[in-house]
Length: 77
Image (tube, rainbow, N blue to C red; front, side, top):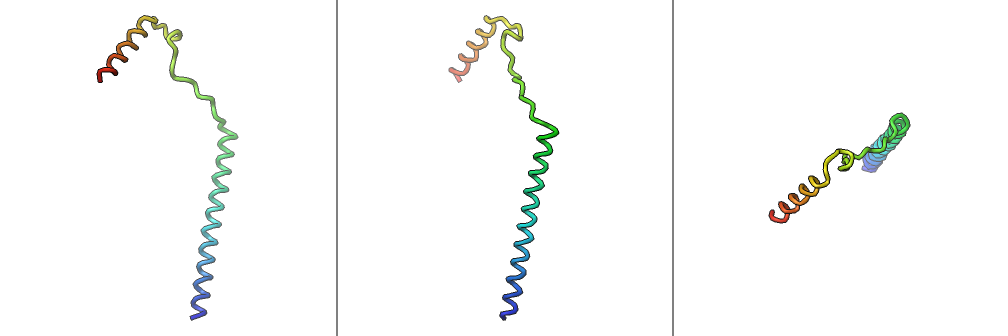
């Protein structure tokens, strides 16, 4: 019975060691890939998709009318 327990503990230690080794290698691979991506494809600052009224050429009175209509719709619904 003692030999069976020792064999079971050895199998458990080997299994847990292999899982730990695999997870450590996975973490290292992820860090390496992250460093490579950041080096060769740096982040580009995002441009704002929202344009101002001055850039679009829309009259200020039209914007005021649309804002009033949206406010009135939201207050009723």
